[in-house]
Image 1 (cartoon, rainbow, N blue to C red):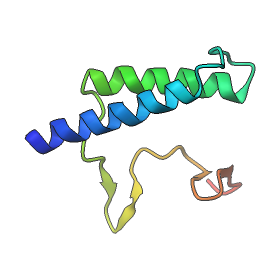
Image 2: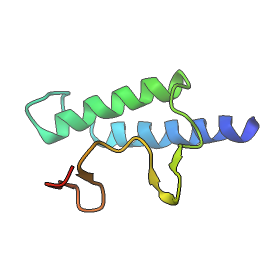
Image 3: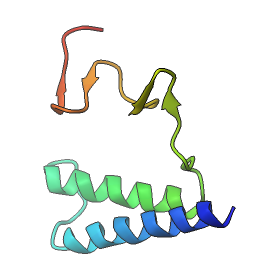
Image 4: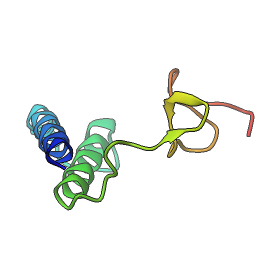
Length: 84
């Protein structure tokens, strides 16, 4: 249990570091930086409330692939694939 609390604390530190790096950007849906601020704020709230499962669930047979990946999303290239 202590290790999970440490993971939450580490993740919060990293998210807060990134929020500080983006502090010059207002949250906005009109820019990539603004959307990142919204996403980081959401992640900070979710981590603080312990609603992010740690360790993250993994797909059976693929230990390197997260379960909650958007459909059709190629996470390595950051592009949507045409295959569904």
